[in-house]
Image (tube, rainbow, N blue to C red):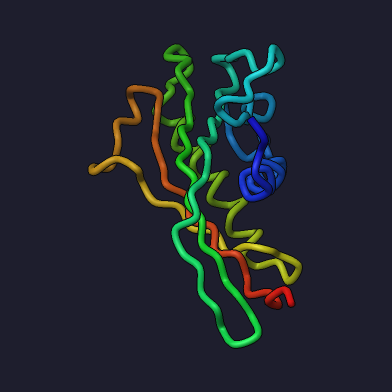
Length: 146
C-alpha cells in the first residue's frame, strides 16, 4: 500500500514531538501508519504510541489561480502503562501533540494549518489508556497547475 504524501507529511511533523515535555516517558512514542506496520513498530507501554489511519480528502476549492485542499486523518494515542498513572501521562502526550501542531501553525514555512478534535462523542476516557482524535490538515493555497 503506497503512503500518501499528506499522511507522510503529518508523520514527519510529529517527529518534532519532545518527550522531555512529557513527565513519565523517556523517548518519543512510536509513531506509525496503520497498514504499514514494521517490526520496529512494536508497542512499548513505557513510551506509548500514535497510530495514524489513512487520510481522506474532504475538501477542494479553486481560488482563482490557487487551490486549497482539506484532509482528515484519524489518530489514536495510546499509553497503557497503568503503573505510571496512564491518565495523566496520556493527557500530557495529547498536550505535546497539540504543542507540535501550534508550532507548525505559527511557522512561516508551513505547508498545512492543523487542528485536532476528539474523535469520541465525549471527552474521552483517559483511564482506558487510549484517546481517538480527528486531525484536520488544511493545505495552504498553492498555484493551480497549468
